[in-house]
Length: 593
Image 1 (cartoon, rainbow, N blue to C red):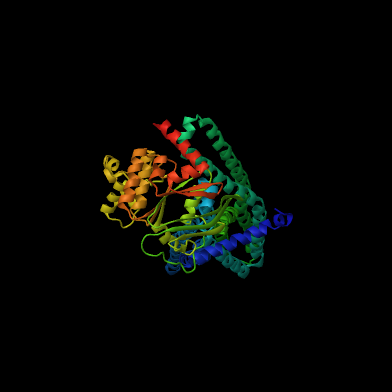
Image 2 (spheres, helix red, strand yellow):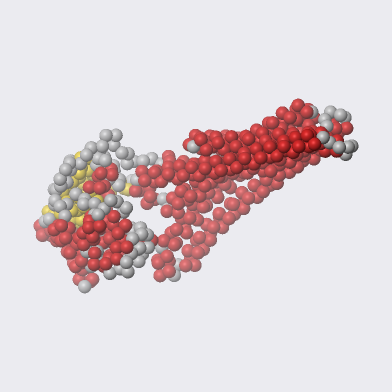
């Protein structure tokens, strides 16, 4: 941070905060304006109430010490006090309700924008960003960014009430008005000092929340590894370090805030004391009446608590600016998978795949370096290669989870960059090795709330060799599998995930080691059923010899390029690297048996 930046922090932060509030108002202006209207009714009623109180003192209370007061004057004073009191109450009601509506709608809008951005961002972003950080953006940062917005309508009413009060003071006596003129510049100076000191602790605290969330989520999500490796104490200490950092930064911010709020609380009290001292002198001089002084004291008493609310807004400004700045980091993250301006439709019937000179980098290192091959419609192809050669990356490029740095991927003759993304992923389904299931029933995990017939759900489960074990579950297809499907074994989760892909009748099915946790015999049954029951092009990232032999053709990747392609037996004879991998697979399968 430059010295120039530091010098303008207080003023700049306030301006940024106000711009933020204006942006929120533009998001949902109607409830905000209704809330402001209620706040203005509150302000006008409050000033009129204190004015009525002063006149009641002069025209009813003081005369009553000297003799009877006309009943009409008493009832008129009571009516005025009750009318303005009811108006004040109605203003509070409308202000509170509609400010709540406006605030909740702004929070919902920001959360939707974050969710939409997460959906649009490439897979690489989600891999590089801890889950806890993603959750912190969605929850803690949104809340911090919007908390400042809730009391803004009230602050608007307070400002209006203050202006009306200043007008009344100026009309009544310039010496009393001088007290108000001293009060508000003092408040501005206090705010500038506070904002300058508060922004850094607020920024660090918001970052700490993301780090604590990330560590907590990782430790809980990896509870099995933590327990089996005896890492409980180490993980507890790792979380404690982050939690202490969060505590320390919040305590620093709390100290700054406490000194500011104490001074803010004292200002109206000091103003009231000055008002009484100066007002007594002005009453003795005959410049104002006792009733007017009582009305002004009552008005400053009403301003005391609202001033705290303005102070609360000013105290929340640094946190709001920091919270929104963290959200802007998400919004500014570049989206590399831009949807086509005029998406092309995929042709009808079976689809083939063409990969033309594809080059893809990871952290500046080429994983795929000029890969070219084709898969004919209805063909079954196994992609084989050593670990880290880019097989999974290639599978993701086929469904446009990422775009290659060079080259093209064609599905049915259409470049995936030009195809409608939703239609592409409906017709080209990919099933990963790590099968994610939602905490709902097996049926809903397969159908995913789509308009899918029960018969299609069961048929897909049968092809995936999942129907039998599903029916043996306590409630069959209505069994809730728990978060991430933890109540099922790894092989069962993979089969449910496969059924989920099959129920959409894809025209190209990509299995990225999607049956690695399944028994080899069951895997053979699944692949045979796929070829028998489905009219689909099948691409399998294979690690088992039994799977490779079922494919019509093998594509062998090595050193980022296609080294050889052809039938399994042919590659064994003419591709030494392929033969070495197959022999290693054979030894592994013998070890499994």
